[in-house]
Image (cartoon, helix red, strand yellow):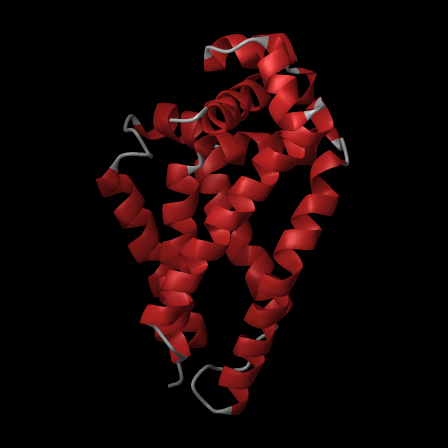
Length: 196
């Protein structure tokens, strides 16, 4: 793994653990590099933080692109995108923590990057849902609120994994509990959206 990738991996962990207050020196040490090497690659904490967000958004775009390619329309695409969201957050848990920390602390550093990267995805999803309703492949619904509800369910499953684990006595990040959650969420969405 190259220096830049090691820095990004270390930064995700430090930003997840300490928020934006994470120290560049600690990130460099975690990456097994010097502070000057970190600054050579990213110039500032702001640029490093932005690079962490951009990397996650690139991964998100790739996961959703694959999902759309496998399920071109109707409820199958909705189910594929739920599955993609679960896959993404399961493999990007540090980003879940960073995202939630930003939302709770209201730091404002993440909102612009998320909006910039997520807006095209969001707009395409809303357009797809509206088109599928018009074609009769999905029942009438508010696509913006649907996106918010699904996002909230999926994000909360991962951000609250520790609490859920203590409550239920099982590791919610293990494959079987995640699969059970996915089946339940998709069944609820199918009941709400699939044409009768």
